[in-house]
Figure 1 (tube, one colour):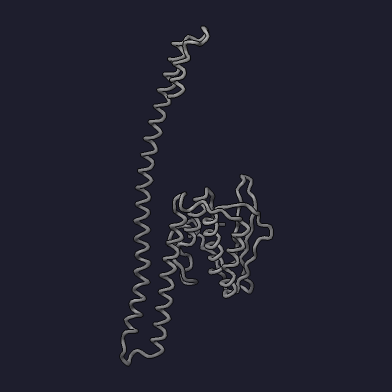
Figure 2 (cartoon, helix red, strand yellow):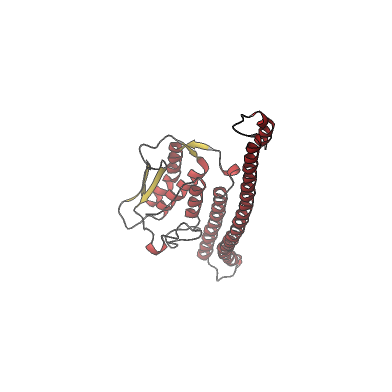
Length: 267
């Protein structure tokens, strides 16, 4: 609008090779074209936003049902344990009470794990304003993630091998940390006790497209081929009998990576 108004004011002073009326007519056509493009773009964004909100509502409903099912099962276990503990009759032996107390403690730990995973997922799916901005060195984040999981790795007899030459680049600390903790933690949890040596190896390199690639490899129990396409979906668990979990870890890692414009995949 500013340029068009300026053109109308200055058109009379143009050289005779460009008649003022012609210049103004061309400007008017360009102006109308820009207005049409603006209107179409705005309406398209509104339609896309509506579809995106509807899809998010559908996914949120599915997530809520799955989460309610998960919590209901665990609370039922806790309720059963409490019921037995409240029974003071002779049928409840001290050994049984001890077993129920352990079961109750484990169940509460698992419920806390669900809450922690949901919180992490909320951060990973959060807006640009709330989940971005804190930037730290990738080298420092890798060191922190490995240090945090060394205790769990020692319990499982797993050796974590970190890369020697981590680049000192600034990255989105919240999302990179979420992805690293979940990927390394899963590799440790699902180690193969039948193997004499159990390891998790990290490697970092630069791809041809300029992205940094972080690889977390392990010699654990692996993931069955039929499940490999779905392993990054919420509540998908390949080995529920091997270790406790909610099935949210890899979904959190995927959300974190995709929020940064990256990709995550399994080989």
